[in-house]
Image 1 (cartoon, one colour):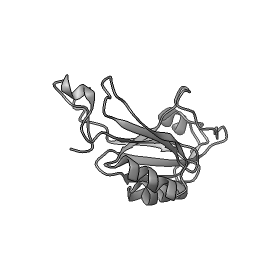
Image 2 (cartoon, helix red, strand yellow):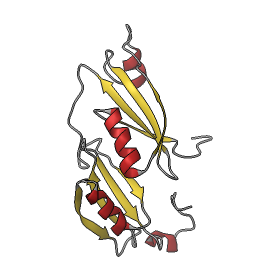
Image 3 (spheres, rainbow, N blue to C red):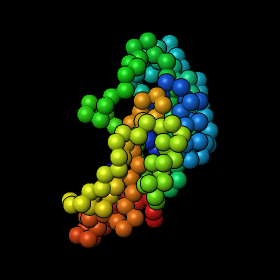
Image 4 (cartoon, rainbow, N blue to C red):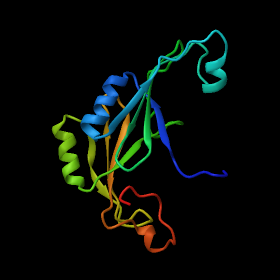
Length: 171
């Protein structure tokens, strides 16, 4: 795409923006910037035509946050007559997760556990493939969203073979 420079933000919908922004600030360490909304409903098909949602949907709030050296998070709270309340798993179409880089995996896991956050299993480290050296573990936001922490203080395996590097929050 002409002029594309990178990912500016990631947008996702949560059941309660206040709860989500508190979690991302207090647990993850993100910085709040601003909120907009409410937005809608409209008497026409604007919401459907422009956002691919029910024409009677309302964006109660959208809140923007920055998490370290990465793209912004645009956190939405909608109400809609046909809103699904079940979050997709990673294996479902539309499944997703957000991954946050940490310098010290052990300290980060202990921190999450001390905050009462559900950590899924123990950290795993890739020993081969392009991800060699990357340690990861998933955890759950209080509303059920899947999140991940990763660490690769010595880099990843692919870096030895490639002439370029994927985006890296360390730089």
